[in-house]
Amino acid sequence: MMSGRMFRRGLLIVPILLAGCSEAELETDMENQQAASEELAPPSETGVLKVATRNGSTTYYLDRHENPVGPEYALISDYAAARGWQVEWTMLDSTSEVLDSLASGDTHLAAAGLTHLPSRDELFTRGPAHTEITEQLVCHRDARPLPRKPEAIPGTEIVITADSSYAETLRKLGEKHPGIEFTEDPDRTTEIILSAVAEQQIGCTVADSNIVQVMRRHFPHLEVAMTLTDGRNLGWYLPAGSENLASDAHEWMNSVEGDEAIGRMENRYYAYIGDFDFVDLRALNRRIDNRLPQFIDHFLEAEAKTGVPADLLAALSYQESHWDPKAKSPTGVRGIMMLTQRTAESLGVNNRLDPVAAIDGGARYLADRHRRLPETIPEPDRTFLALASYNIGRGHLLDARQLARDLGKNPDSWEDMVQVLPLKADKRYYPSTRYGYARGYEPVHYVQRIRNYRDVIRPAFD
Image 1 (spheres, rainbow, N blue to C red):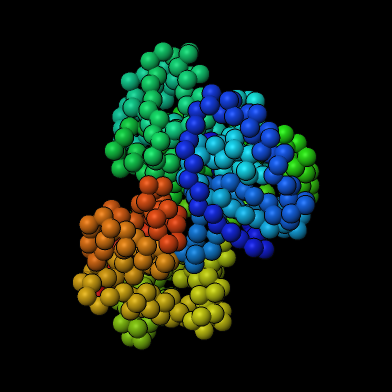
Image 2: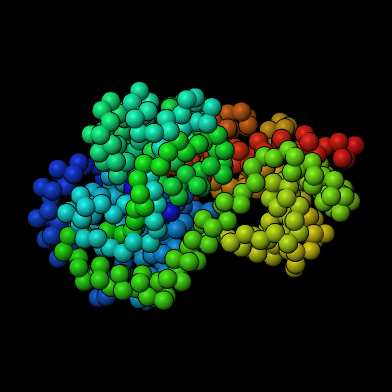
């Protein structure tokens, strides 16, 4: 169903909403699709590659600095750059809309983490694959007993995103194990449904293993009950009759250059996730003893300069780097406060690996996030919102605050914003915001973890 670079030339984001259609309806459009694909000039003639995708953490989204990122964005950008093409992105909200766009024949290529399936091969031209995944049944870890075998699934509440490969998987499984039932949700993506499972609002769902890998970093209560499929390929699709462009895409993806692009994508977006350290009080207490003493005076000095409490800075730093002054992520953030190069330069921090300079810079950056919020916001809400801005970026936070107003909620209340921020990942809401999709559930858990860490760390500063 869904997946899981740098695009050096022009970027055009075209918001188009298309109604989803069934596979039967797609088949009736085959002749029109063939004619339309013949009329669409190839990128080798126009220099423009038209790509349909969807917002999502394993496809395409804007980071906290409002730069486009994501696994599919990365690969398409590298491919286009290798051919000297610009990319014209069509942003859609769901898999069904991406398939609809392909059927219309007005896009050259769909890069939306689509599973390669025989049923789709009958309708479209298969492009190259880039990621191998399995489909997994995911439930809340406290939901006992968890269905560990297919014969235990009947009676389990399962909700999946509509028009996905998951429906086909469950139907085939139901042929062997009668009683398996599921609901297809046309309004929620897999990521949003997973968050609902984590909040115990629904029983279980099915998701690609790469999406589960990303989401469990933010929702540790998600548990894989079982793997439902063998390895499957995620990759690109093109309209029927697009064999020439498909052949070119295959050639690039299977080249040394394409191999290196896939390696960079995997390293940036997936490789480090397995090392993510969830809230581990034993590890935190050990580091309070053997790491914090090296930096505690620097946190106190930063508090004296900025007014940001030292224990809060220490908790933020632990969340970011576990107090490792040499920490580095594949996305380029570095140091004990995990500053981006751009942020460090704006703060005058020449060496992000210098803990003294990095702590001072991170404190000033958080103080700036705090200062830019209205003074009328009461504490501690203002501090929590500043932390959210540190994590997700000021633009996305402003979007969420406006969305709160639109929904009749209080943008100055952290309690209300905890409900609103995740809507930045919900296709029912983010298309109306200025900066679009963001992993809005992330700052909610980010702030929660920092608050938990601070409670444990605070006695060291007393």
